[in-house]
Image 1 (tube, rainbow, N blue to C red):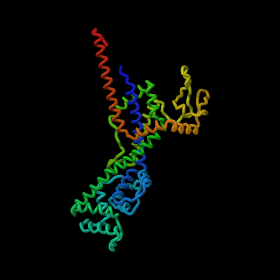
Image 2 (cartoon, helix red, strand yellow; image 1 turned 90 degrees about the vertical axis):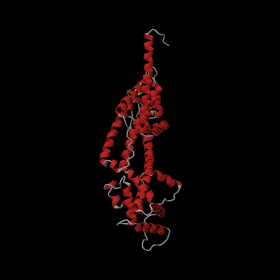
Image 3 (tube, one colour; image 1 turned 90 degrees about the horizontal axis):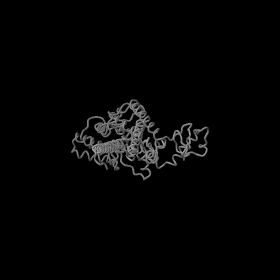
Image 4 (tube, rainbow, N blue to C red; image 1 turned 120 degrees about the vertical axis):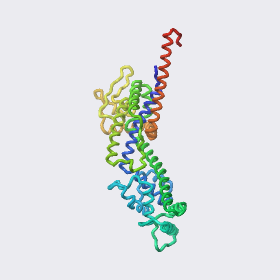
Length: 400
């Protein structure tokens, strides 16, 4: 008979990681949508293109890398975002900054702040870039005293102009290619930021749901009923969900729904995931926030206390273990104290769960599918061998 405890434990653990990863992804998407993190990341990338790097010390750079709410505010970036080409791509109100725009829009807006309105000519391009560079180097130009771009940026754009051989169409393509290269890196910046968000969310989720990896593995290893229920749940989930979508990256504004539609969709997915997690938590006895009352029974053989719903006895204080009619009653303050003691007793287990969640749902979904295929293959192999032995025994041959 097929029975692999280690494989079933691994499948159940990966499934738990998948559910929490999916919920963390949805929560991070809700946060990103509400705070406009994509728009901020895009604006930071454009500012990085148009402004020279400011020399700062290590701690300022470290804080800058963690500042998700960055909103560059200087003469260059303000002029760029106030051009008609960019300004009207965003909606009104708090989401006025566009989340994405095409390379052609970047090129048109950049030439607009460089050359002003009117036709783009070779003479105007060379004159504007030359004026900016001379102004930055301290050479006074009576006709144009305002420095539109920093010197290093202006020199780079001048290099693109020279590479295009003075051809305006080629020059625009060079600018668009520059934008596309930067956006590839900006996507990586955004992924790293979301990775940090997932790690932080993952830790708080593990803490709130009492999802200690060590405890989950221990419970699954000794509880055959829990393993069987989890594997059954995994089977049903895999059959009903053939793909998992990583919705943390949107490359084009056309991919984005309206704000309200997107939040409604995300909230619906969130509710479904919370229901799945509630079922899994019930099977494994997870849950960090205590109910008002916990029923306590004593096992006749081991004399150990059995809590319903399950909790961590080590995180209870002496006062909280006092029974009243076979029950423990918890105040709000006692619930908070219990949560704090869970943090102390299970920090490393929560941390491992958080790191697992930060790897993302696609990773765990692919691994889960591979493990389920392996389980089926082993089951078929063992079942085939057993059938063969039965046939041999029926034929009168010796069976080893």
